[in-house]
Each structure stands twice: as C-alpha cells, then as structure tokens.
Length: 312
Image: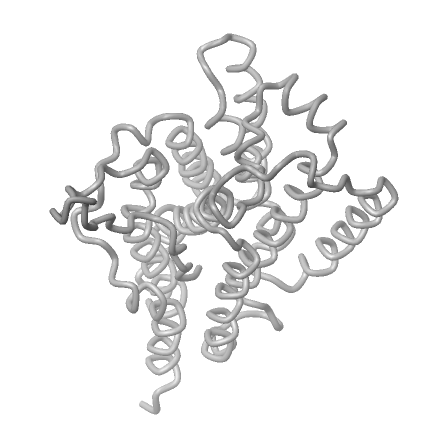
C-alpha cells in the first residue's frame, strides 16, 4: 500500500475581504468538498490497515498464527487506496497525470526498503500499480470524452454522469465541446491496443497484478455512474451496472474467502459513499498531517527493514 497525495483542490479556506473593507465570512464548503469528506477518514483507515497487514506479514512470527489479520483487516487497505486515487483523479485535481507522477515518486523512494521484504522474485510496490492505474483511467476517460458517438450512445443512454469524465479546464469550467477535436478512430484503437499490451506486461511485475491495475479505471467508471444517477428506475439500474465490474474485480483479487469478503465489502462501501452516502460523513476530526501522509509508506518499510535485518 502507499500514502497517496491529496490533491490541492480540496477544502481550501476561502477567507477574504469584502468590497467594503470588511472581512467576509468563511464560505460554506462546496458540494464537491463535502462529497470528499470520506477521504479524510479514509486516509487514517488506509494507513492503519496497511500497517497491520505489513506487520502481520513481515514481522510477527508464524507461531503467533496472526495470518487472519492480514486476510481480513489487511484486505481493506488496497481497495481504499485505489478508491481515493480514483476519486481525486476523477473529481478533485486539475492535473491527474501530475498526480500520478507524484505517486510514482513515492514508489521510487519506497522501492529499496520494499525490496528487502521476504518474497519470491522481483516486484514493484503498490505505488507503481496505483500510478499506472490512474494513468490508464485518465487515458480511457480522454478517449471516451473525445469520442462523441460513444458518449451519445453510452453516457446519455445509460445516464452516466459524463461531466465527471470531462478534463478540467484552467477555470474549473467544462471544456467547450466545439473546441475539442475528436480522436481519430485508428488512433483510438491503437491507443487501446497499446494500453492492453502495457496492462498484460506490467501486470506480472506490480503488486496485485493484473486485477490491481484495472481497479482504478473500474472505480472511475463506477463513481461516474453512481454519482450521476437519480431516482429513475432505469438510471438506477444503469448506475448499478456501472459498479458491477469493480465489485467483480474485487472478488477476483484474493484466494481465501475471508480476504474476498473484506475486499468486496470495502469496495461496495466506497461505491455506496459515491452514490450518496457521503452526505452522512462529517469532516474528519483531525486531518492527516501532510508530511506524515507522504512519508508513511517509504518510512514504515524502512523501519520494518531495519527490524528484519538488524544484527541480533
């Protein structure tokens, strides 16, 4: 797991001075900021469950028989991290690819202590999985957004929230439809083929493999679908259909029944939050310190490596 970076667009204070010289009242949080309150709690839960997983897996002796903790509590972390990256990449950052680069930098820093963990063969840590998944999700989003035929036949017919898939403009306004050039069909097909090849090759080298790489794109599809649905029966079914792939993928990620159950339950909870349960989630009481959030993933692996290999 990893400490992803919270985009800069969420929850900034809006104090300023009014035209008459009086300090204006603090603006109420926007709907988008309120929709993201769950990510503040998610940060704490993700770090705690990830740490429990790694301590159980790498430090506790087998005689303690604590594998149940890794197969239960530990299975919450990856779907939670993936959901936060997908959510921020979809709704809360102006530059998703730069966001992916920052995740990749954390992965590069953490790779050396990560390689000292006991495992069979070489493997890239979870940051590479998340960064690649986010980049793939953004590429697919851009291809879909530029293909007017696809948008008309799928997004409108299924009532999926196509605004969620619009790239940000510099002023947070939807881009002018007439100024966006459609992607040529040949280029779109070539991009999809290259994306498929990259997924097939990279899946053998990253943590959580092929299922892990598609988690973020499938989350983005689900979030766009359920966040844009209304009370109409047909659109509700379409929203449920958009969430089905990520739930099926979550069920394929683990071998034990306990691990599958926790992974699917976590994923379902996050989809329900996107569908409207966010309204009942208050702002986190104590926000995660940014430096702690950024340093925890490489730092906790460094500590585990020292405890594993310190001369006795």
